[in-house]
Length: 133
Image (cartoon, rainbow, N blue to C red):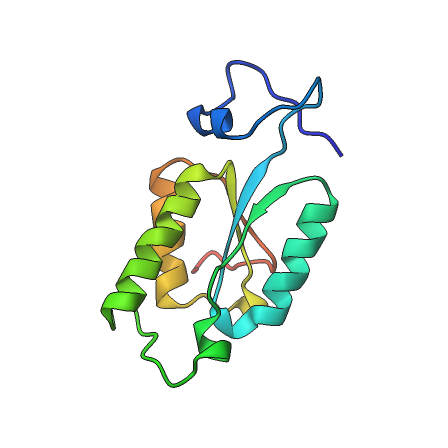
């Protein structure tokens, strides 16, 4: 699957992706969602990658891998730093893909969606959302 680019729609960050030959650069998709959904996030990552996308995923699955930590938004300096790092991943993206299992969107993910929207990034969802979301 290819992703056609024109000069008018390319973003500055695409210079970070080396183009080896005449192949078009892949679409960059940053995943967002609760770390509770580690298995589904990994599944979505694999599926989007197999479709030819460059996927930026979550680096730490705190709720599942480190449940004893405080993962509340703005809870610890570690959580604040990870949230900041994930916003930088959104900066690099052409679009954001929200893994909202059962329609769930937590506070951190909601903030990431708001951030992406302010940047004008398209936001897609795994599951349909209602107009209230």
